[in-house]
Image 1: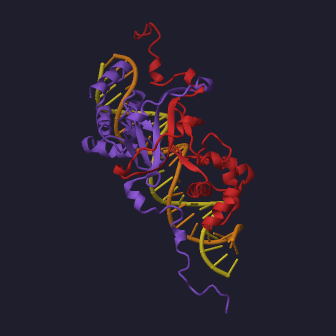
Image 2: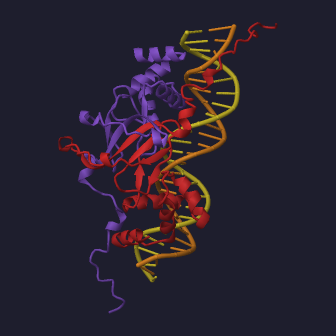
Image 3: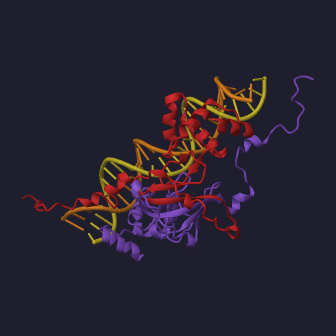
Length: 159
Length: 159
DNA sequence: CTGACTGCAAAATATTTGCACAAAT
DNA sequence: ATTTGTGCAAATATTTTGCAGTCAG
């Protein structure tokens, strides 16, 4: 937990038990949890913690550079304890996000965006696709629509 | 709007005016709007449209392959009318997402993920950084904390 | 006509805010 | 002691759902 201590000291922020436990809950997870998932895990150790605090502390951790709010397709914001360059496999079906190591993709030359007035700090590649669990049952496209009158003879008006 | 007609015909879906207008509202926008932003734009032409319909139709458009629900850091889901391979500049400050053309980055060899049981369909690169508007005022890290008693003498109880 | 779609209202989910008390330095 | 943090409750924002009437084919 030294990283948190250092960061708090540097930023002149109190080192609270909540910050410690919430960061602890995030670190080591590779599933990019939502604030609520973190809340559940944190409450195992700190039952009194409030949802509000989890939201606030996660933001703080991001500000401190100890976590990243990742880009994800789903509803809730999701957090990543890894701040080093890495990539993601994103299941377009269940919206799971997995870390993906590809060292060869870590050295792409950062495009020159000076003309676009955008300072690039880092990048990550999102590989969209279907995860193991979803690739079998490719439900997609209108499950309901599948039932299309099972070969009935009712179609005729009257004969 | 032929693409929508074709897609609806293929999938045996009614071609409603809402679907037409909502897709129309999305096409041509490059700012990756949320459902609510689309709603506001759609209501200029179709004042009676409901928020529910916008959510549902956007999902339908995604299923039809006429739009993409993009990965973004913010709260609401955001949509992209572009379905071809392209990349994004994501402002970590204001969470704006801009399209970024980089043809040389469109031909990265898709990593072999067979061993990982994940079928990659496509990819896009997220360049994280600061947009023109945000790079000037790098507020970040605790705006409040900035006010640290500006050398006052008020420290005493009653002067 | 018929089945799917839309709009409404309400539920469910996700996130933020104001305030009083508690805790860290 | 001072300042920020936390928890609570309520406000907001976002998304989904059930149902009745409407519309496209």
